[in-house]
Image (cartoon, rainbow, N blue to C red; front, top):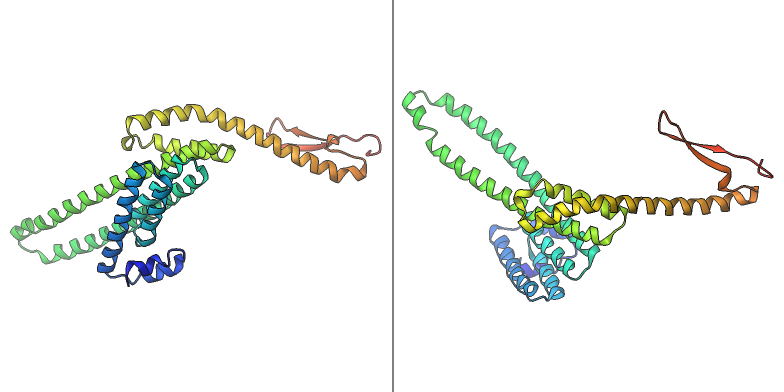
Length: 279
């Protein structure tokens, strides 16, 4: 199966997953090479300011990238989000950045499960070794090779974690920016949440990004509150219009009902204030 075969099915995710379960190491390497070639071209187009063309190239890279390679897919989705930001296509930027973040979350879960399995396996092997080694000299010499392997595995694990954190920070910055630009209560609240997460990842942010995060953490709360109050007022206005339409045949209106807050519980109850024909 060539990379073009999978690319032709790029819009049929279930079929892609079934096909890619059967990929050989050689096929996977070929597809990843093709994906990286498109990615390099897309990066060049982005640098040249040709953002629409870059999006197309990144999508070509996504189409031939093995779908189970969550990290590589996340990088591509994050890059697409960067293009949409440049084009001020805020909704598309949010969608692409969210896809990147979802992939990273899936990857981290898989890594965690793998580590737990490996630790359990290692404990079992250590128990067997302890039973087999009887000589004090052999016992002292036994763990040397294993220690070297453990050090290499730990180095690789840390490198992977650093890479994941770096891409997550980029995707969060891009999604937060897009949500903030979109506006509205839900988007602004989401942007605030993203910036709060970023504030806990300062080690993965440059000086400029740190300033942006701190500035947004100050600027967003009043914007969230204003948007909340505005949308709540609009919602109650629409409900009031609907209620007046339903109550009119009975000679009533929503003015006949008043929301009263209980000082002790903080809850609300509705009181009827009759009068005229309504009474």
